[in-house]
Image (cartoon, rainbow, N blue to C red; front, side, top):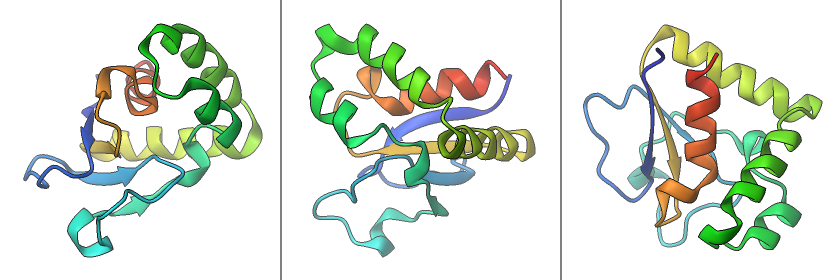
Length: 118
């Protein structure tokens, strides 16, 4: 299994984080680039603005969000970005970062599952 995890971007970077990738479309509020300790910001793998707005981080909509998001991830640019994450995970630990408070119902958790299932 790939060593992939999701964390909030606001949390302190850990020694076992490996490559740190922000998977949100928007930059996290109140956080400088230095404080984020990112290796990469992969906007192409983030949900579309339309899907993000529709979902609104409402847990009751998560199953449908996940289905729609997985469909979006088959689009060429997004599929390439997902493939890039899988390639990174083959070489070592990867931490997918998001600003959301509810990691369990986030795009980062969907991505963790998809990268691990590869």
